[in-house]
Length: 224
Image (cartoon, rainbow, N blue to C red; front, side):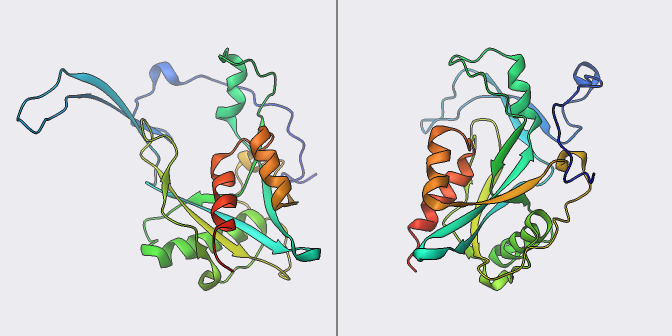
């Protein structure tokens, strides 16, 4: 069985490195700051603590891949991904009880922007590359459409913004998903869902991914 086809049933913590790790190493960097507000009249506020989480690349791109379906409707591609941070919620007690284990989360294709990605042309190029790597579609970067301004996911703690894009892959063949060889891509699979069904799944929490719902709503507002 290939890694992509493997059925993952859980994530095992082999070692917890938290206690002896610096906050500026690893995939996420945490800056722990002591701050104060400067005011128009020259005065300042009391000091307070701020934690800022940075990814290795400042921003990301997310691309909604869609195709025309019968009867004039449209379908979008959802990709199932392992999401450890969501999965480890099971060790905590949320305010609203939720018995689900979010081992895998369905969402649209996404990836980090590289330093070589310059301007909107760079965003479109990165969107096309992620479409190939994560979904198996060869998309012309010139046919990637931007879906409004980038947005913050959690601006109180996370510096990253996400640039939303969309691409019509109607009639394009889907190749085997290439991936990046990471164990986090084990069990990856894709499926097509109608726009109406996708919105329903987002709103009921079956697809608990904000960028997917926002991309759907923004694409529906784009003329043509």
